[in-house]
Image (cartoon, rainbow, N blue to C red):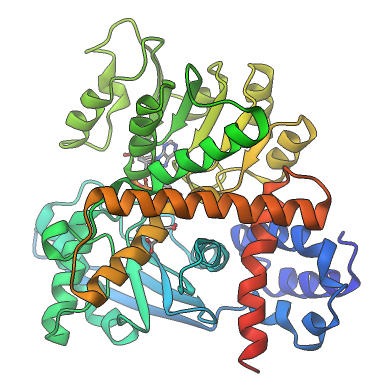
Length: 448
Ligand code: NDP
Ligand code: 2IT
């Protein structure tokens, strides 16, 4: 499957060991395919078992969370924190609450986070955590009690220089607030152990916007470099209307593009007038299901209850910002057939390997999530810095730093692509190789 016999052997034994972890294997396969061009040229990689080590989490903490629901009944959920790699800094990565959370998904996310964090240039290792607890339909008090139960176990494994969690799918400012509050009560000190905290609790201005804005800054670099163009008058579709998708949409409009389609779990809206983002913001304050309400405010918009229909809307740029594996080959074909020429991943691994290959075969510009959505964790890194220095930067200062970081990430991916593949636009290879090199050198420096 790969050119390198060493990689074939490592991947074969990994897929045997973790045959029940498809998302994890998918993330590793994509990574290994990229580094295939350079692994055999550096014998130290094999000698030091770098790949065998990099694909195994340093530590995986699994625990039970018991909590009491509003009816007084005890509920039990499963939770974990995968501390993947600490070669370049303290473990860092989000926490996800969703019924689908399992070891495979946590490991794929922690694995990708390691390279994403490396690309930011900041000293952060890779981790991910979460629980199969679903905040959807739970009361505020239930969410608080669950978050407190979660921290009652996790607190002993995290710390400002050990492991710094943040938000992800299903975990926003409210959940972080409850987790951080419990952590602070136990530890009895103010430390930046969580990021994406509320501003009043020591959070950073610009963190809420960072992933979506950063995604657009990355795409701006692509448009400039490959097309001598900008977002002006581009038709954009965005799946997911959560923390990432909504902020990406706001930035697209600010940069002169038009978001003509968005989705959430309740369905898809196609609005040729440009999505009404103020309406979406207002509706999302009271419900996670917004798209099925949108049409009653904008009767001219088209609604579909089928999530994959978003990829049928004609567009220039598609930004999947909901969840993993939301673009299968059928949707990739729909996108290409309807004129899409740039795909940028706001979510983590939203495109299957087959769909990614289809985009490549059809000369679609493609921005992989571990580079394009790194703005969120980058500003988390800036939040850690501000907490450590006991000061706050202004929104403008943070946004300027984010912009610079995203430009640098694009540059690193572009250059690695050019050097290692001979092509300037294989950003999947570029991101994997550039992200890998820093982690690899740090592991080498630190011995076995
Ligand atoms: P949120 O929970 O804030 O939002 C997720 C959005 O996606 C919601 O609108 C949700 O709909 C929708 N959604 C979920 N599943 C589907 C689906 N199958 N089809 C269509 N829509 C769906 O999460 P985030 O915005 O924080 O995260 C989104 C993605 O971005 C994840 O992959 C995450 O890992 C990644 N990411 C997040 C970062 C962050 O800082 N938050 C940073 C980098 C990446 P509904 O509201 O109806 O449930
Ligand atoms: O996937 C991600 O990069 C995030 N969920 C953000 C992680 C972080 O630590 O800010």
